[in-house]
Image (tube, rainbow, N blue to C red; front, side):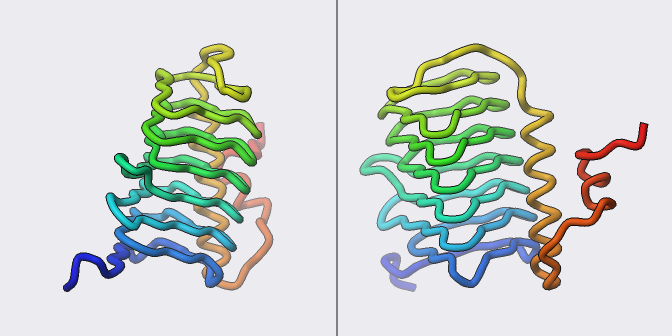
Length: 182
């Protein structure tokens, strides 16, 4: 195979909406989901999406000039986010319309607030709460459990969408921990 051709590798459990567009070298791990109107492009380097991570509606994932784009396990990349040649650790939530630029790294269990702009080569440690333009560390807190719960909810949604079910049941919400019967 010519190395210039697209090479999209997905686990059999991955759900990708029909309107998503994937080009280049992309690897998507088990139980991950790619939602409507996502675009992923890797003309060089590669894109990796970790297990149970979700790439939500209208997200743009692109590689940097010198860096791949890597998303860890159990992450939620929410609506209209731009990821550009960056690395996102496990159990992160990237808020609506945030932008994360080339060479930036977000540590595990972190949250990037909506509309934040993470500048090139910025590095944030695990358990960060990041906000602003340019983005700054606001506080530290381990958000891993809550972020993984959100990712589990999207994994369940993707299972349902693959079956033509577009609404969550109370049992779905219980199964992922959103509702407890205590």
